[in-house]
Amino acid sequence: MTNERTSANRHNVHATGRQKLLAHLAMLLFAMLIASSFSIGGLATRSMPPIALQAVRYAATVAVISVLCFGVFRHRFRAPSEPARFLVLGLLMAVYMVTMFIALQFTAPVATGAVFTLMPLASAVFAWMLMRQRTRPDVLLSLLLAAVGAIWVIFRGDLAALLAFDVGRGELIYFVGVLCHAAYVPLLRRFNRGEPAIVFVFWATVCTLFFILIPATPQLLSIDYAALPGFVWFAAIYLAVVTTGITFFLLQFASMRLPAPKVLGYGYLTPTFIIILEGLIGHGWASAPVFAGALVTAGGLLLMARLPD
Image (cartoon, rainbow, N blue to C red; front, side, top):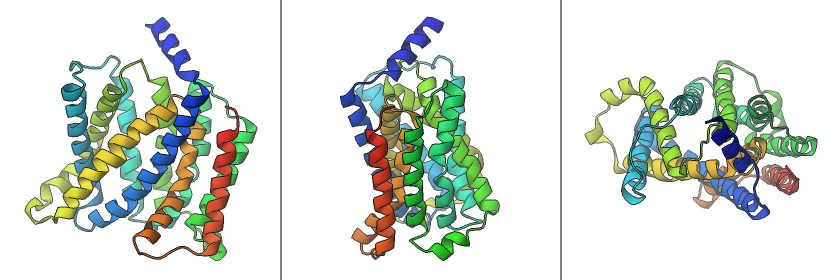
C-alpha cells in the first residue's frame, strides 16, 4: 500500500506544460462559476434558509453524481478504501459552508470577503505542513499583489471603509471556515489514491452532505416545500450541478497539477467576476477605482501563472 501511495503521489506532482495551462484555465472557469453562485444563491435564500439550501444543493449533487458514476460510467459501487480521508474532506468543506452563512448573521459580506483573501496564503502554510510543498517567494509576492487588488475590489475602492474594518465575531467564525478550506486543497492531492475522479468526487460530496445535514435537518423539517417558488428549485439544481459538481472536478483537476497557493489564488478573482456579473444583469457597474483594483488582481494572478512552481 505504501509503495502504491508513493507512486500515486509522484505521478500527481509532475505535470506537463499543457496540463498546467489547462489547470490554470480550469481555475479561471472555477472563479467565474463560483461568482455566479452568489447572485443566484442570494436570490434563492430569500425563500429558503441558507444552510437548508446548502443541504438541498449537496443532496442534488449526490444524486447527479450517482447517476454519472454508477449509471453512465458504470463504476461498481463499493465502499472506498481508507474512508476516513473522505470524512476529513467532507468535514472541512461542510465547516467552510456552514461558517460562511453563520458569519453573515453577524457581519456584512464585504467583511467576509476580506477574510476570504487570507485563504491562498493560509493554503501555502498548510501545503508545507501537510506535504512539505514549498511556495516560491516570487509566487508569494504575486499572491500578495493579487490580494491587495482583491481587497480594494471588495471594499469598492473606498479607503475609509477599508480603514474602518473592525474584526468581530462574524469574521472570526468565518476565519475558521477559511482555514478549513485552505487545508482542503492540499489534502485533495495528499488523499488521492488513483481512484477515477468521479468516484473521488462522489464520496467527498456524500461526506460533505452528511456533515451539513447535522445543522440543516431542523430547518429542512420546518419548510413548507409546496409554497416554495420555482426559482428556488432552479437555484438548487444550478448550485448542485454547476457550482458544486463541476467546480469540484475543476478544483480536483487543478490541485493535482498546480501547487495549492496557485490553485486558491484564483479565488481572488471572484469579487471581480461578481461585480462584472452584477453589471451585466443590470444591477449597475462598479466605479473606476474598483476596476483598477480588479486589474491589479488580474496582473498579480497573471504574474503568478507565469512563474515556475
